Amino acid sequence: MDQTRQSSLPKTMPAVVCHGPRDYRLEERAVPQAGPGEVVIHVKSVGICASDLKCYLGASLFWGDEHRIGYCQPPVIPGHEFVGEVVALGEGAGEKYGLALGDMAISEQIVPCWKCRYCQRGQYWMCQHGDVYGFRQGAFGAMAEYMLFPRNALNYKVPSSIPIEHAVFIEPLACSIHAVQRGNIEFEDVVVIAGAGPLGLGMIAAARLKHPRLLIALDLDDQRLAVAQACGADLGLNPRKVDVVDEVLKLTDGYGCDVYIEATGHPTAVEQGLHMIRKLGTFVEFSVMREPVTVDWTIIGDTKELNIHGSHLGPYCYPIAIDMLQKGLLPMEHIVTHQLPLARFQEGIDLVASGDRSIKVTLTP
Image 1 (tube, rainbow, N blue to C red):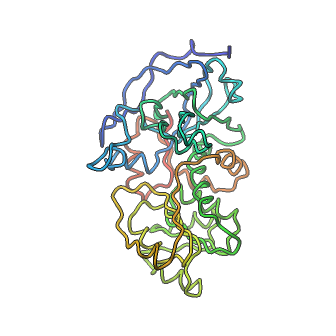
Image 2 (cartoon, one colour; image 1 turned 45 degrees about the vertical axis):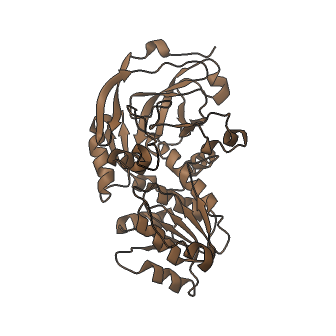
Image 3 (tube, rainbow, N blue to C red; image 1 turned 30 degrees about the vertical axis):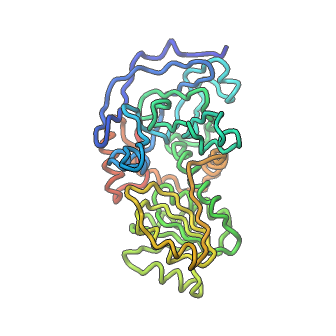
């Protein structure tokens, strides 16, 4: 049986609990216990994601509408971007994950069932019955002092060479890498990434490794565009100041970009991309949209015959993300802009909502 420090942990802990849209409360909750194959971490840092914000604001994906059942199952502890110290290992967990007490560790955001069609085919990130940390009852998130990794989770040791405040970025960076992989970028491609938030910046850094001929970042904030160029973008364009579709067409002899990745979460960026991309180009849709998007689908089919790819989570990308951070390939000191104590979670949510004073906001339990 693995060594455990379970008895030395407190009985209760402070935790942010989601009860409904705009109803998040700091409460006292029981500290989780490690059963067979499970891991308990002392959370050191947790990020506030754009999807956390959309859940907080009541987006239908999370709370449902006439077309679908909501994904969020309150009451639940939010938080799916995190890093923490291993403080308890259930039977078999240490050997399975290569973890020891005192290690820093993370867990992929989905906890798969490992039994459905997708899991059996190695497509675990699309699991029919999986739980995603921070939204479902089966996988409470990291906005708490302690957190449990269930027995079906995919866990990784985080090297001590990566600072805690940077390691919390592993999850969003893994998602960014997967989106870039979905773009099938080739040498000499012109690539446009719309949105220079945390995920878009990770996409820029990952896309740079693909050696495109021209890598363009789009954002409404010039400061974020400057960070985008530090991540590897050749050019930053602000749609408030220039006609970005016209600029990209000029840069490509009127053809348009080869790959367009949408990471803004705003419907106008979808239409913008359809007009900006060349015939037979590849459009990657990454964002969680707060409201439905309406576009002329004729552009996709009869006009341009586009390849439309979705991107979900960060499968098989965590080791790559860890390696990129170890090598210092992103200017993390400019990306993680705010570190707040857990009790100031509402201030953190408000910072992410405003979007003009922060890039990545994290909480420290």
